[in-house]
Length: 454
Ligand code: PHE
Figure 1: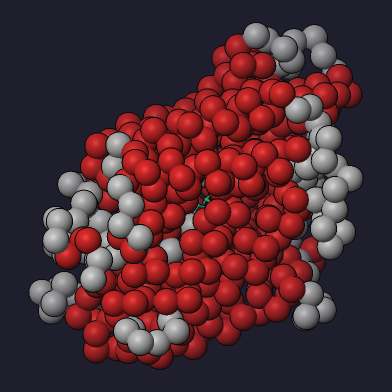
Figure 2: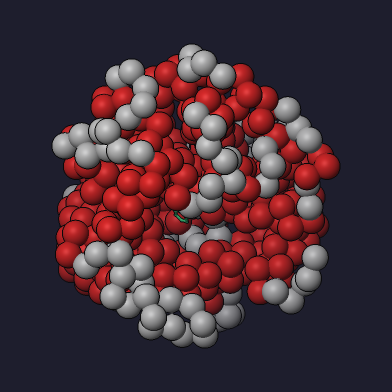
């Protein structure tokens, strides 16, 4: 029996807190750093349409499945399966999730650390008067270094730790409630700046005018992969948060709101970035360097660029923080409930282990660049294992669990709050969960492993 049978379980205290925390988890580096460059690499508008289709047809059903599991069981990612499917191996889905949390936060904190360095670079006006090559060199010198990337990673992990130790209501909910609206305001300011640049319309038509000729089978699958990562699906983050949602909350509505927030912010990030990219003649397929190399160059060439650079990197750090909190919480909730650790000890232990793994990721671009396992650096290995293997596998098993193990009756009871809501779209949800989502996720999974060549 877990200790939560004796002590009242922590929960979110308000409707807005639930949405802010879950949306805070979803909105992160995935939206603002990854989404624009993946859209850029895959040709713009057509990719965006496919992505939006996957968000609705697969992302939303998987999200609702995670909420149902967590809120019904009132447990962490592993404990939930132990409770809903006792004496079976389903709890292994939670094990995959907890393992993924360690790996994701390890490399996530590397990139998040970079955003902190770039806040300082923005404050000290380091980009001023530099051309594209000099700004690229600035990034190279920094991210291949040892001390500063590690320093910022540790600072980032410490802030994450402090918030998670404060707990669900006083930490996670309180901070995301402030941080999320700030984020939206800052990104809207950036959008306004970007779309008013001369030549901005080309960037807008790049993302909003679909050109299906450039769409390959590979980009269709990477749209699904991006949908997964961006919505924080497949590793029990939303099972854990689901367990903090009150029985009175409407899960379906929460799913719609969180998905809308995540999608709107990704689109806003695209609107903030592409018009500027085109206005300054930069290649949209610049890749992962888009934020750290290209944008500083753009910022220092526009009026008010000093301020825009500063708010942009603050925004990125905030978005990363509300996601990292949710990743650490997956591990903490597990250690607390299944291994009876205190919240503080659990958070400290998890953060230390993750930081040690994270150090390996950070040094992968510097002194440990040549240390390779299966031909990959630690960073690449952890990113690949978590994103391309563990998340799709976890997501696939989650929809199979809801669709084929827990079944329609029990799921309906949870979604309709014991019959008090009508849950009108429930049959659509169940159809997606049983047939559409498993098939589509399996495709991404096989593709990620290279077992399916397209
Ligand atoms: N969704 C987060 C982002 O977009 C990343 C994340 C993935 C968070 C998986 C939790 C779980 O940055």
